[in-house]
Length: 357
Image 1 (cartoon, rainbow, N blue to C red):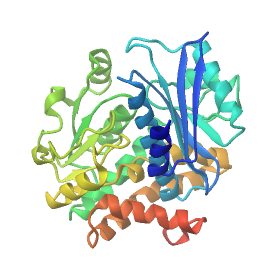
Image 2 (cartoon, rainbow, N blue to C red; image 1 turned 45 degrees about the vertical axis):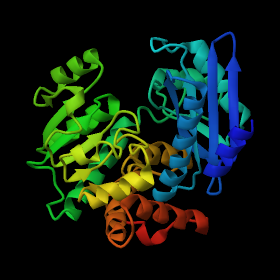
Image 3 (cartoon, rainbow, N blue to C red; image 1 turned 45 degrees about the horizontal axis):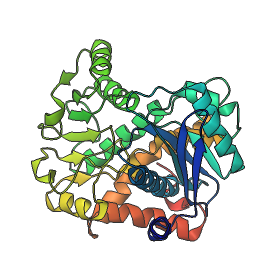
């Protein structure tokens, strides 16, 4: 138990809720990191973790990132996340599982608002919504729909900021983008990039998913999964799970810009972001660049109209650009992004100076 409290203290978490329901097989954890700016909206991830401590570490890292993501996006929201620990990699989502998780979310009375993440789709969210109103991202019982297209648009805006900082035109025409993982997010990034004239290279672990994306987007180039991080490109965009860029492989990267769609893409954010800077690779911090889905769902929760949502989504390019400029006089872009978000957290109110794109 002392180890758990130690983890909470070192990361600054407010609350952990462990969720168990024997009938549905639910093993879940809800981590609330910081609610100083408001209630916390964050995805619910279903994943087969190697151990209980791996699940706990993931939900704590993800929820902490959500605090900074919401702050950097100038949202009146806190940071939280939840995970469901699958019993096996082949476990399928069930209505009973979703409803059980929904009941635990409801116990928090709106302090945590659940949304989609890896392994959870709009149907799962709608099942959860039958047990709690504190959920976003469904299509029938809950509002918001799939956030992936909005996350993807934000990532593309981040890519443009990275290209501009590299001294190139902030446009995708003729740019080569390598995407690791073409799930809902990666496919949407690829689709936008192709439509804007980019050359797109992809890799995907799920062969069925890859075949479907190749059929939908025949202009993509496919490389083996083990090659995607080393392929020559202008922009590398990991869109699968986190921790894929580390001190062990940064020297192998062959890109000018790293702009992740995935959360927590750096194994050791402080050290690895410094290594990227030293290697001359422009890093667009993940929790800023991939904030589009949060902006859409949290914005709807807060009652923003569509023009305001569009403005905030477009502002990701401005925010990333500001952070990259700040990073020139700091240790890394990650450090600059944390400072950018913490300024908002410490003030406890919106950062109006960066409110417009």
